[in-house]
Image (tube, rainbow, N blue to C red; front, side):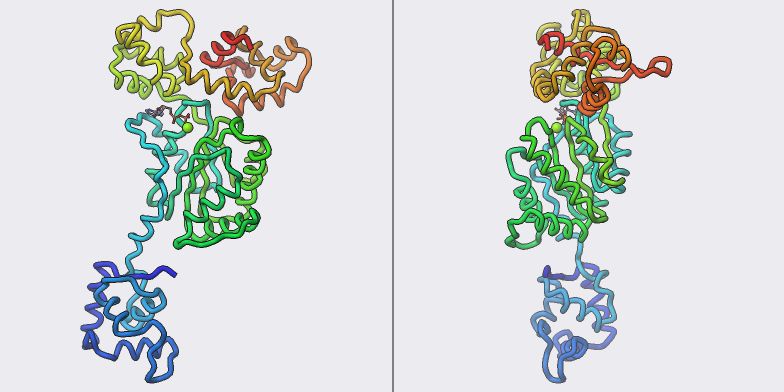
Length: 411
Ligand SMILES: Nc1ncnc2c1ncn2[C@@H]1O[C@H](COP(=O)(O)OP(=O)(O)O)[C@@H](O)[C@H]1O
Ligand SMILES: [Mg+2]
């Protein structure tokens, strides 16, 4: 049991209460009264009651047992919750040591506002979007902005090579106040974690939960574990960032989970990234570049050295170049995401890469057979296709970087 000691203001109140009773600080009176209150026979001090603990209580030099602290407050007619120092031990219960620092951060006011509300109202929030779109950066800002809404905040980068029981154990060890041993049965671990999540408002961020990097059985096990963690209502929340929204997850979680798609940065914030890296441009030209890359901050960052070295920092000269340049790291992410797709899904990408936006029935005419609904749903979950609404019709297309990648690699 964690001990308690008085805060500075609490210490003052204790002194005043003792003076009001005309007690001697080192007298026997408080010890006798407290022991009586705790049910000890006359002449015997209760467990935890002693001159030493009383002095520790009065001078607040060290924490004492919680039950003794409460009893000492009681005999002085004080409310222990107003006397004890609560903020210090709680603040140190965060574990954000693995969270990345984001040196410069632009825009995202609306997204942060939406997400803050979601964290307080859902047990699971799934922040998803294409690689490099800024999921991790937004999650970091979010964690920093909700300090007062949660008692504890924990940040983990999801490790696909570890069995899920390891993740549960890691979280349990982090959440427990003293070293403990835990059972090895994963079902028991889930129950223990549920207890912890019920005891205090905890925010756990699992960053980079990308299914493609995991073996399918491990990933499925992870999703089942999340479903089990949704069994009981509590005030805690698990935030996942992922390139792929998990299939059917929110529907199965009975209103406890919500997905939030992260779109690109707004043009002005995108231009800030370019300006911060000394690129030269008129506002309209900068915005044109941001739009071409759909506000993907990673892509914009990676373009900057190229514009600097080959185009003398001039965005306009870079834009005069035909086609679209896809930076290597973005290609890497796209390759990983596209490898995961079925042949039919890749076929759809190929059709869209070589035509104007197409409706579902136009795609069906072109490709004849296949489960279009399933395929378009899966491609959408991975943010690989974009919807364009035209005269109440939904048309599908690829964003420019995906289109270029599919064309170049002749998928
Ligand atoms: N709002 C922002 N303002 C400035 N830079 C950003 C912003 N969002 C992301 N970045 C930068 O863009 C890069 C990609 O962001 P990141 O959060 O890692 O993307 P994701 O997690 O979606 O793959 C990082 O270098 C990050 O610092
Ligand atoms: Mg990330």
